[in-house]
Image (cartoon, rainbow, N blue to C red):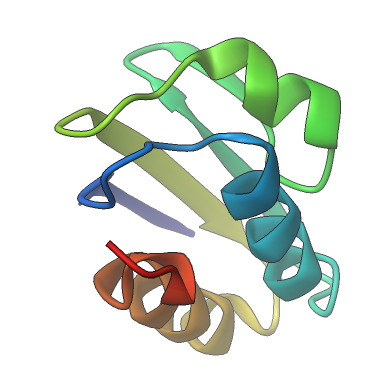
Length: 89
């Protein structure tokens, strides 16, 4: 199990389009992937749950991944966040 944090650095935060891109990544993996603030974790494969987080720019999110492909899932999620969800600033 991986339990780490990740920072939201894109200008608009985890809005609908960014959440959709995150789901494109998370749904490729069999691992359980949860994301949230502190102890309030939600399913990172569910668009409504992600939108309810209200994670704006500068938010530090907790990321918990558990499963056989957890390392690859973490790598792809970190890449997506670091690339600011591939959005123009």
